[in-house]
Image (tube, rainbow over all chains, first blue to last red; front, top):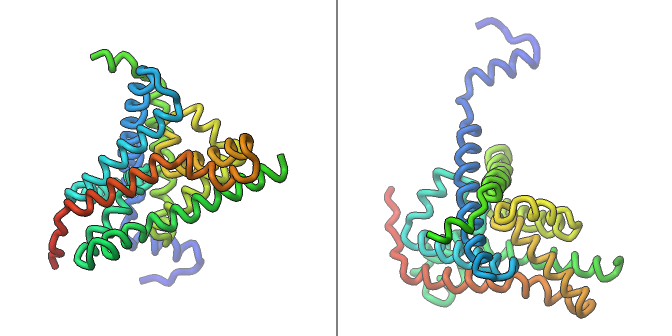
Length: 147
Length: 128
């Protein structure tokens, strides 16, 4: 093997030897699954609005339907298969939030229905709520002080 | 099939593309950094709340509808929007009540359906 002179040569060498990262494939899957989940939300929203409901109420209905669906799909062990394929495509939509509640709760069911299921539900959802709600309070306070 | 007529196809396309792109950002974070999914969710919610507070996220929501509100950034946006609205109505107390009020449906549904779904699930044995 001939010696590698510069950093660039070395980088090329590493790139050639290391396996191709499937990042493009992952991104493509995340794109269309994520887009599809959002589109389901949009369709539910259109239906609600055509029935004369306000944007805010329609948005709440969309969240509740998607959360319920993904919670039960997780319970049936179907959602994790989608998650493996789609990565962020099913993690980032609100379906991922519901999934993050049910997965650990299922796993710790043997520890009981109060501390096992009731407690472990918030392993991931807890931090999301802590940071989300705290951020909204800070936004509200800033808005109150400066505007 | 009257519900088919209520669908605006252009809005649906915008929703699909925007929602998909937000997920691609998440996928890049997963593949290119060592962040855990929990951290990524926290980053998305917090980013949504900040962009919502700055009024930037509103433009994305106006453009993409559910494509912007269904991803977790939309959850943060919803919290921040609720807090601002409540501050306008009832003053400083609104900062503490508005956010959760706006997101109450989603949070309660997640807790309720999450618990029920966990109860009826059969934990699968881990195969080695």
